[in-house]
Each structure stands twice: as structure tokens, then as C-alpha cells.
Amino acid sequence: MNLSIVIPIYNEEENIQPLFDRLRSTIVENNLFPTELIFVDDGCKDRSLEKVRGLKPQEGITIRLIELSRNFGHQIAVTAGLDHSTGDHVVIIDADLQDPPELIPELLQKIHEGNDVVYARRRNRKGESWLKRATAKWFYRLLSRITSVPIPVDTGDFRVISRRVVNVLNQMPEREKFLRGQIAWIGYDQTFVEYDRDERLSGDTGYTWGRMIGLALDGITSFSNFPLKVATISGFIMSFVSFLLMLYALYSRFILKVYEPGWTSLMLSVLFIGGIQLVSIGIIGEYIGRISNNVKQRPLYLIKDEKTIEP
Image 1: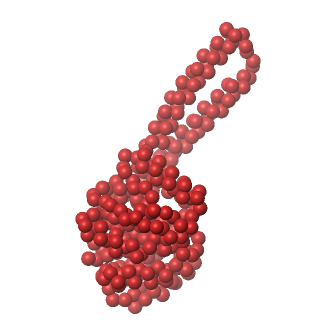
Image 2 (image 1 turned 180 degrees about the vertical axis):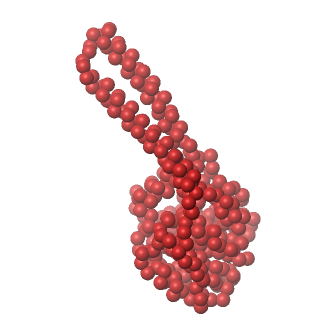
Image 3 (image 1 turned 45 degrees about the vertical axis):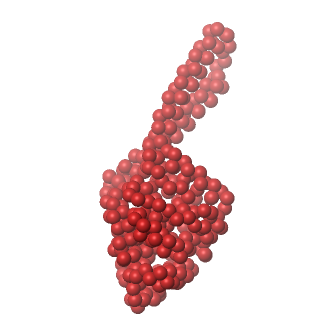
């Protein structure tokens, strides 16, 4: 079968050659020919492009380089690679070597058993702080509870998907991509392989806390209306609490004869209700902003250059 391996890269100059060496060994040892390696440059600022151009392809292994016009983000870079892939099955793997290329044959074995999606599920995550591990664990479990789509927990984008899954993904036009959620939404037969995730080989991760929060918001707003329900329920609760406070204020004024101008609890109530309103407006604004981005119908990404690396 034809195999495509999509590799988004962002400032991975020290990891390119080790990644290629391990991918090549895996391909050769398991006779995974023909295979195309699709490196997607997501606006690299180091020597990553030079490193990719210096790779030496061999018979049965094609190396393609897609340069985006700027940094569009990890999920968009993966999407660009999927759009330009030609294989019967497509592997998505990052360039930092936290996900072992040697696991690809085991993922493909599950594909041969009749599955359309085989994702790698992490048993543990080496080289990451307890805070990052904990927040990731909480996020995925929260997401699985509030969405109608069963999104697998403890997984990233490292997986193998069939051509028909790729074709469906190419028909999904939303701008805020959350591929692991989209793939789960598609359905078909899906299974997993467990593995131990290594620490990053070298360099710094491109997933800062800001990017992770953005990805979490994309995942939640793309597959759940739960935040809107929370805002609505909070509004009803605060209306009920405000009604009780109003009754208490009237009781204090006319029955207990306790009355002080500028009552402190009134100010606290106003501030609390105002905070709930601002949070609710912010949640609604997130959804409206995503609607606006999709209505504009701008290109998802722009390609600066595309080439096949010659031997």
C-alpha cells in the first residue's frame, strides 16, 4: 500500500535528521514501500528548512516539503499535509520524537485488521511537569464528559488514518481545527495502541500555555454547547439569588427595621452578578468569533513553496 507520513515542523532543526533516520529505518525494516514523507514548514525561524532540504531520499521513499507563508498553527499545518497527501493511509507524527516512529508498524497492523483510525494512547508522559500532565488529564476527561462525541482520552495527533477519513476531513471547512475531535466525530472503526511517550529530544516545544489554552477552547467550542448552557443556568441561578436578596432586603427594611444606606451586601451582589454577566458575554463572544471566522471564508492557509527533495 502507499503510505504518507505528515510531519508538521516549527523550529525543529536539531530533530530533523534523527527523525528521518528513525523513520527510514522503520520503513526499510518493515518494507513499508512506497512511502512519502511530507514535511510541513509552519513558519520556522531556525535552520529546519535547510535541514529538510539536506535529507537524502532513497528508492521507495519520497520527501516533500511544503512551506506555508507564515505560522498558521500546528493543527493547520497538519491539515495542509493531509490535503497534499496521496497515500492509501496517512500517519500524523510530530518532529520532536516524543512519539516513536517505531510504533508505526504496530499502528498499521491494526489498520490491516479492518480499522480506519488507529491512534496512539499514552500510558505515561516523560519529561513533562506534573502541572502539564494534570491539566491535560483533566481537560481530556472534561471534554469527554461535556461533548456528545466520544473523544479518546490521553491521546494526541499521533495516529494512522485511512484515505476515506482523510477525504472526509478535507470536506470539513471549519477554521478552528481540532483534528482529534474531528476524527472522533467521523466515526468508522477506530481503535488504539498504547505506548510510553518519550521526552522531547531537543529544543523547546511550540505548544506554550497560551497555545494549549487556545487548542482547549477550540476543542470545547467545536464539539460542545456546554459553556452556553452553563451561562444560561448561571443566569437563572443568579436571578433566583437576587430575588431572595430582594425579599430579605424588604424584610429587613419593614419588619426588622434594620436599614443602612449603601448596604454592603447590595454592592457584593451587584459585583457578583456583573461578573457572571461578563463571563457569559465572553463565552457567547467566543462562539460568535468562531462563526465570524468561518463566514469570512478566507483560505485556511497559504503555501509559499512546495517541492520534492531530489536525491
